[in-house]
Image 1 (cartoon, chains in turn purple, green):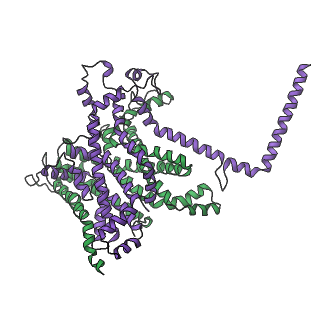
Image 2: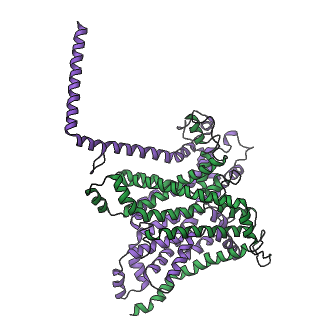
Image 3: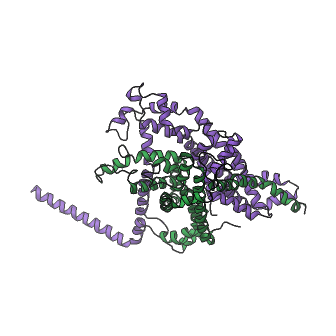
Length: 335
Length: 298
């Protein structure tokens, strides 16, 4: 009895469901375009499915992209026991700071950090200023041989540094400048720092795109060229200055080939010290003297690596808003 | 009238550092390298006292099989890396541009990260990731059941070549994306709106509006990355050291080896000059091809 009743009720329920489905189908048929538009997108908006897919792909790519960095960061916090334990892959049993303490000492962090900042910020500031002056000169004045000078400057971008490194090094040695920061400042102050050509190009295009009217008006009022440049041109080219400065700092900071050649024996920068990490570690913690847990391991090396890129990351996160806006406003290349 | 008369003098003052700098720090040095390359210099650069050997160093360069091998690898590396970086960079730039402003900001911050990592450190990270015993990639492939034991990413010739390219693409796609984002932002929004009103679907819009408008930026970014890739040094030096054998030796690392490892300044200079000629040649061909599409000059 009860079973018949139940099956009746089930049938009724099924019937109800069927009616709902049929209703939905009819509704969908009636509003076919709306539904399709919602799911697959229409001319005016992106569909739900496409959006979800797009975001899923983005998340996946972002994860893959950041994987090396994340894994590096996590490993740098692993204690020696966690490192040996195959069960511990993603989450360490404790956030161990010992690696950072050791890496901090091995890198001689305060002094190498200061050296790195000095070696990248000072030439960058000079390079940016001088390149802006040159870019302004090229954009605003007409004179004999301008085309040639422009070509000569742009060609320096193509010339590989190994073509000039040996004669440069020998010249600096004769002048007794090897190991001195002047090796980097001198070329930068002549508009020939690392990849100066691209900065000159950025400023050239920026100044070219600024209206001349204001400058001409100021000139008629009797302002000197220098004053016109400093008071009118420079303030309107601030985005170009920001972009150039950030690019310049990153390139100077990251350059290891030339800094090793020019500064070896004098200034010890962070990347230079990092490349000697193992040796420096063993000087500080002799393998025979310390217990097994204080021997060098991947986690300590990765802490050192992370300490190395940390300053740039911090700088970038502070400046990134202006940086992105400036890149978009200057267009950097090809505009 | 007064202003026009003073103009050349003022221009001269503005451009004086450039005049001096470009001559002293570039062209004089190249001439000097050229002079070195004609002498037999061992552990000394005092060319006046050393034997003048005409083009013997160049003959040595062109006869060496290593040179041709490294040229082949460098060209292959440059081509593959640049093309892949363009593809990945374009994808990242488009994605960042399409999503909401808020998410776009986060994506931009993420995209930029590999760019701020010094190449030498990038090399260290990847050497560790590719490590045969403790490396992450080997571990992932094994745990997915794709291979029985971790592949020798850096010691098997074919794998080493592509591992190097992979590491370079990971790092340098970000700078490509930054350039392209700048280019995308420069495209006026009303062009998109016009295309939308005309009923163009997104793929069509991308192909017929975005790509052509972005082309000048793409071409310059390709040139920029291509030249950079041609002289790649830090990454490969740190990742494989040119190995296995000399499979991933680039033209730049050769010059470096002859200079600093063997102390053969004459031969190293000859290498440098040949590389210089190759890069200038390739760049000239590329520039003459794309000239029509550039909006560089006034």
